[in-house]
Length: 147
Image (cartoon, rainbow, N blue to C red):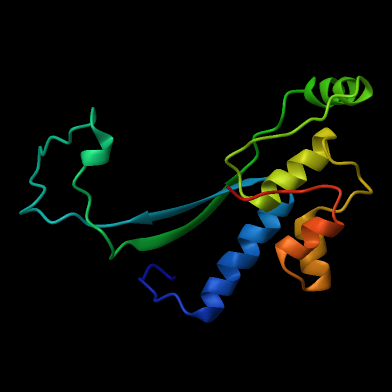
């Protein structure tokens, strides 16, 4: 903050959480960015990373400096809502599998017609009633499962 590293306290963490939730509820993907300065004795200028084996990259753990959040919209193709409607009309149950977080997935599912506007997701019911996700699933007709 103000061009200086600042420890993340509860207030700052809440700001991050609130921003993430705001963007996700609007169907946006949220990415967090951090950096770490690599030690010259371990990573001298010209160090060759083995990019063919990414699981073996020697990146250090911890001491990352969080830089902030970025959100982006990856809109579904225009034909998707109509295709979903046709599938539902034909009696096909449509399920979406995505790597997005639950709030983003639920928002997109509503926008493209997988969930109807009047349907509440298990996540919404859990939040509204202050109950667990498992209890909310029993009451919901639209379910978002975290993988």
